[in-house]
Image (cartoon, rainbow, N blue to C red; front, side, top):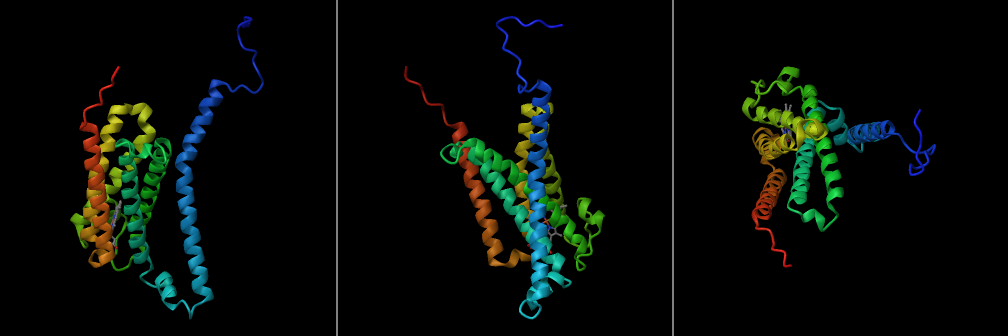
Length: 252
Ligand code: HEM
């Protein structure tokens, strides 16, 4: 039996035990991963659902929409749209990460906020990358099966090298996103090394998009690729400048 000394605080009915605290933080961590995945899937289902309803209610007014959503090309549209969303989220994740390390985020809206958005955007980018890859199953023109989608460089009938770069980017994205949750086990140093892979992932995704995408001939796609590449390059240079700048002397 344990005895309380007069200096020990009175145990209260509401004080959480260490085990409760651990369980709560585990739940928070799992919710942190599951929420953005659930929200993005729900948003996708809602978007597709409402578009389908509109296409059925207004078949004459929305003939082109109807054809786009229900016609043979629907999966092709889905794969291209989700490709750009995934690529955009990858760019956004990297840009936010760089504003944390080059300290721009401190000015606004603050490191912890940017860090949260950075983490969520990376998970969403992965979810849209998976939608992009899986929707190729329904694209009858390209005729991919699971092997061509998931085995790098196996898409022999369509741009195997450039599609392979996208597959590599996808697998590396999985490693970087999940390394965040493995950090307590793998340690900060290994985590940082894995995190540096992000620069390679962005380069792979950019080359993959430009050289395997059907939209690369459009001016809007070219502007998107150029703006995202140049802005990340500039943020990276600024990041290197900040880290190599000599520390300011503190005058006593
Ligand atoms: C298993 C992984 C992946 C596979 C099998 C794959 C496959 C493909 C294919 C076949 C295309 C050509 C689609 C077309 O234009 O008809 C494409 C385009 C594209 N992919 Fe991927 N991809 C993968 C991962 C990724 C990832 C992770 C990203 C972004 C982070 C990405 C971004 C893009 C972009 C931006 C395009 C250009 C779309 C367009 O021009 O319309 N892909 N991908």
